[in-house]
Image (cartoon, rainbow, N blue to C red; front, side):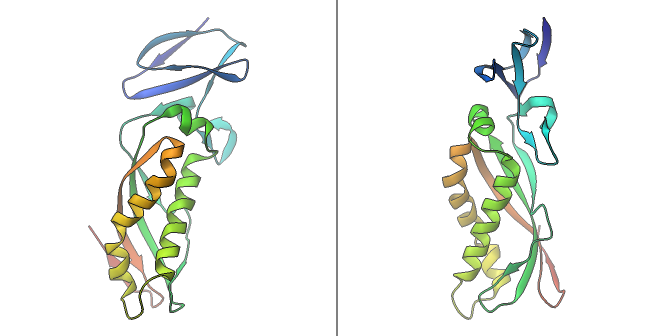
Length: 173
């Protein structure tokens, strides 16, 4: 017998013979070695490992966006770089594990695609930085349409910094 301790605001998905068996919540649980195993959110840096050893945190968490030095293109072909914080909550750990591989990469790609699309659809004569700052609610709504299938709710998208092609940075909040 293996003993598993699950703390408050954590869940663990258990597979039996490679298929979903049960979800563990707060408390002490026992697993049968070689028959049952923990399944968690995959770590993109090492696909054979799970983030937090398979424990899925369910309270609000912050994800820094984007994960890379991504460049966004505006309608006038100018380039922008940005930094933001995404506040999210995993509402269904089963979906977060089984409906998408590499959950945090998927959220990163989803938000990047939404922002790039909105930048290219911006009305002519609008200042891109102001336009982006006003778009945060739209990013949350659109991202939630897709991320609900993954068991994740995006609570807040907060721009922290935007850098334009001239290297001028604008910091927010």
